[in-house]
Image (spheres, rainbow, N blue to C red):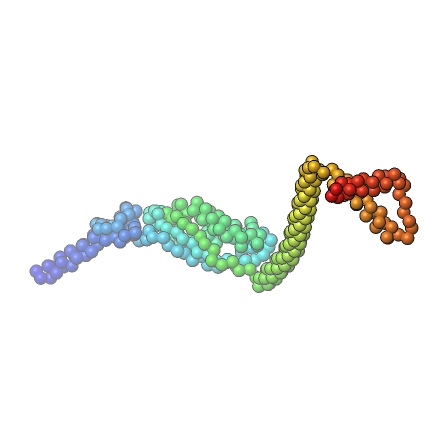
Length: 304
């Protein structure tokens, strides 16, 4: 009886271990019943029929990085290019991933390499360095259509390195050095050009400033001369007004006549002193009249 109980206990343990399965989160387990697909176990506690059902495949539903081996690709301008990358994919259908391909990881790797060679073969060498994002997008689009039957979705592809041959690298480095030298020469010439422009601008502004200064000085001078002329004119007018007022006074006219006669006599005397030649007025009657007038005025002023 003890042996029978032990056998029953062992069978019970086997029955429990084979019938109860706990699936982790983000995993999917494929169950076959009598060699045929039966279902997919979801995360959590699941029950199987012992000795009838079996776990055929276990898949992770997480994002999986897949290193794509390095390979040599030939560009459109017949240049060899060493390329390697990394592919990110995810299992979306456990049944298709189990039965769609015997090894979907190897199939994805081979397809990624083939697609990459095809994409790079349509591009020139310079474009491969400039359009890495476009290459990645082409590879993802091509793979995503091809792996639908494998229950896998390609999320993204990233080129890790693009390595041309050594001689191409040297030529590219020489081109970069020449381009930098060219930019340096252009920058220097632009600097000299800007310097000349600044000098010319400064000279022009200085000339304008000097012209403005001269203009202001001439305006000030003209204004000063105008003010002086105005002052002289005003003084002369004031003197004339005073003389006119004095003439209106009693004896004013006679005083003016006497002053005019005195000035005339003095003028003739000065001319006679400056020249050895005797000067005789052309109209002696005018001179005599002036002298007579002066004597008459003098007698009137003298006390009786």
